[in-house]
Amino acid sequence: MQNKRKLLISLLDRIEQNNLTSAVEQMWNEGLLDRTAVERLYIKREVGRRVRAGESKTKAIGQLSEELSCSYEKVRAAVYYKNKIKGKTNGNSY
Image (cartoon, rainbow, N blue to C red; front, side, top):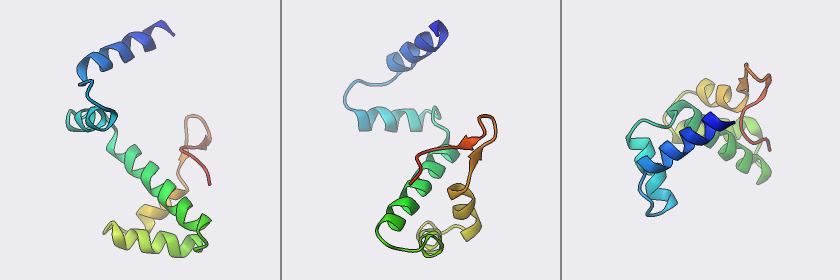
């Protein structure tokens, strides 16, 4: 898609070319990243990591909600979030 390429080039022109971490941090600071989507991705991956390490999903969700100082339901919702547009799970599965 031609427009996608133009948009990506525009984004690359906007960020510093130092390293990946500083580029992502700059994008975050400029509001170019969706905070909710980033939080959801982190939560899904962290719960998945803990489940693979042997914790129950319920315990992993409970502990992570305490660590993040948010509700159990917020973490649970992020774990089970489905992209309604595409109709499939958003993010990596575990």
